[in-house]
Length: 170
Image: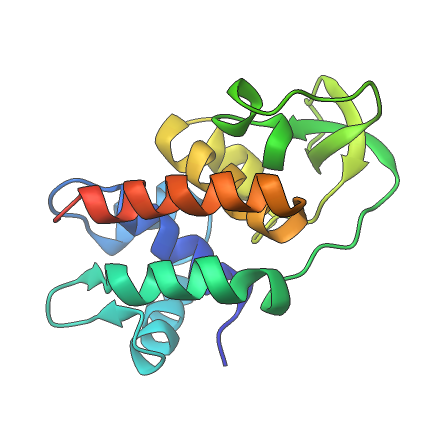
């Protein structure tokens, strides 16, 4: 069975251009090498990762993210907390979605400056990892747009995820 951290790992791999190694991936994701090995093993069994090519199976990953993630890794809105904006409040959706004056979705993060309702990220280290990789941050926000958003936000997020996952061959 896939864990949320397995998707977290696959999304990061989909942002990497060129070669990677387990140690560098561990450092960028703030999770152990053994967790990455296990996560990729589970992803390979699910058909979302090719161990031989050392790459995500992008068409399968796209299908899973767009059609399954909101059911498997659904969001329960938490209490008001300071954190890092995600979903429609984070990039790139925040450039096309006009926000109401209410609280926005955030990942809890001690150094966060945005007050909003808490959304549990795919992995507890996601906020820290997102701060060092803008492309990864945006992809995580798009996935949260599918997990937490309304119909319009989900449609925009799905289109953007499709474009991002399909545009890269490597």
